Length: 66
Image 1 (cartoon, rainbow, N blue to C red):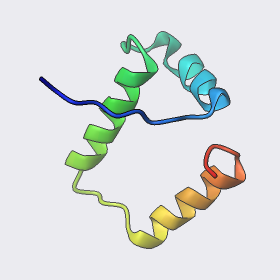
Image 2 (cartoon, rainbow, N blue to C red):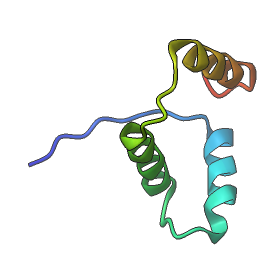
Image 3 (cartoon, one colour):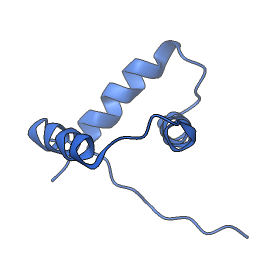
């Protein structure tokens, strides 16, 4: 039996993702997020620590992260 955890996302972000995937082959935001995360993990184009910090700051500025 698999164990799961919950990740909280702002409703505005989820609405944006839902709109984005409207014409895509994903049945839910969960499927899309899982796809993107797995794709990134398998990518050889890793994100540097500095890039990760910049991305996190942009997400905070947009209100998607605290």
